[in-house]
Amino acid sequence: MFNSFHEKFKSINLKVIFLFLTFFLALFYIIFNDYEGHNSNYKLIVLIIFFLNFCPFIYFFLKTDEQNIIPIFYITLIYFFFSYTFFYLFDLWNVFGQTISGAIGKTGGTNYADVYKSLEIFLIGLSALNLGFFSVAFFFKKKRSGFEILKIKSNQEVLMITIVINIITFLLFYVLNIQNSFSSISQIKYPLTYLSIALNIFIITKTRINKFGKLIFILPIIIIFYIEILSGSYAFPFTILIFVYVFYFYLTRKIIFIPIILTIFIFLFLHTYKFEFRSKTWNFDHPTNNLLYKSKSLVNSFKETNEIFFCQKYFR
Image (cartoon, rainbow, N blue to C red; front, side, top):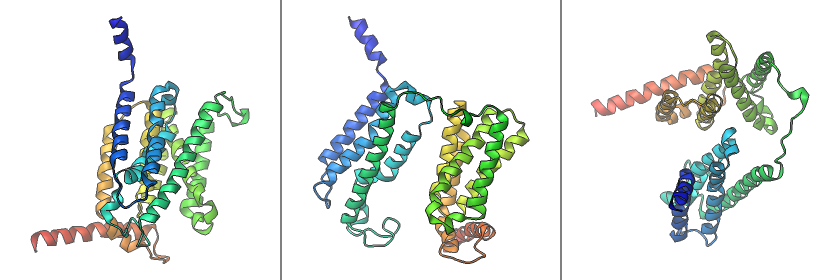
């Protein structure tokens, strides 16, 4: 009997146990935290948001099939947790006091009523995300074979599709910049960019091409990352890199630490000069504010910041 119990205990997923412990610790924190300054519903909504953001991971570790697909839903939840849920959970608005301004409230004068309104909107969005995912997971379990015409049968077809998607993405969103003229279709840029990057990674990892060919398909990823860096906002370009690593791991089952360390270093390096670079390129509507000008501005920001640091350190 003891051996039977011991075997059952060993079979319990330790990751699930860890998740449960983490969940209950956070639950106690939410329950016993006063959340001073907020209304009475704030704690309840934070609790629901935490539940929606955290509990799907228990399903992920218990369901083996979920671990064999690209975890886009769960990566999205991780992003939401550290970008939004974490902020609401630990009530970090108090760091800024009653009036929130600057980078947090771009218009200035953002108060707790605005925070609560954003909390409600986030709750609706997160609920819809979970509802959509689990509705598909539980009510549409039957596997479809798909349309025959959409099935890719050879590497040549993959190559052609990748080249076409690359050309369309670069031409529309990085050469013509149609998203600036037609805001209604601006959101198409992001799924098309991710599709382009995913296809390039697939070509590099799953097709038999030489090193020069692989370099050709790496270049679009590097160029997109560089252009997005020149926009002055680092959220999207570094999200692209995270996507590259996750998709690469999914295709190869290999974890390479050097690119991860390099990405962290690049992010910290660029973040150091972010505000100087933005002051040169943001709110500057002029034909010369192109990629060449932005590239020069990025280099000048490095130089100026280093010169200021050198002068303050040695000639103060």
